[in-house]
Image (cartoon, rainbow over all chains, first blue to last red):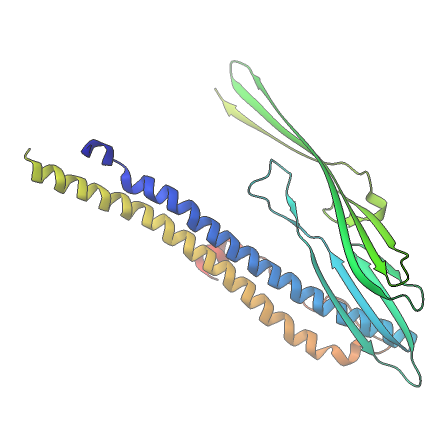
Length: 197
Length: 82
């Protein structure tokens, strides 16, 4: 039995080490989301302030973003998607202001029709991912290639009080951002490496 | 070799293995703390220029957005803290 103790400490640390790494990864991703939240809150207030000044209005500005994130459990080039949002309302006007409401969903900005009240926001997503690994060997070297193809679509439903939904469908573009013009875009990643024989 | 020598040898093995992996763990922890400090520094450094440009942002000359650029997360920051 004593022989089984060899490398026990290494084995234990290999098990608990992975838990420690997961804890550190969670802490780092929490820091990242705090940062994204701060940037988005500042951006939403600044955008609302600009709209309010430009249009002499009481402006409401909402931003919904889906940043791409690293995905430890996904395949090569698969990545992940997170969601963050912020909103601000600013009255910066002379006289009686008009009420204006704007939404920026990822890379697309639009103004809501006058009097539209949003009561809920929902999203649905669809992802298509394929990966392929090929290996070529000759007497001098082994050449490996990994290739991944990804299509990702997000549909955002702005539920209004009148029951008429505003639907925005966006696709993942090659720069890692979602926009309406990129629906159906296939993002591909490829890496090739050579190992001498 | 008697039994006590074998046990002492095993104890030393565990200590040695722990010492080796402990170095890697400390490096990992150090790097992670530095990444946290990088987030913290960015949060703190983003706020003052944002506050200072608030009034002009609501004018005819609102300036550029973003008002501050984010410092990149570099290898020297993660491994040396600078």
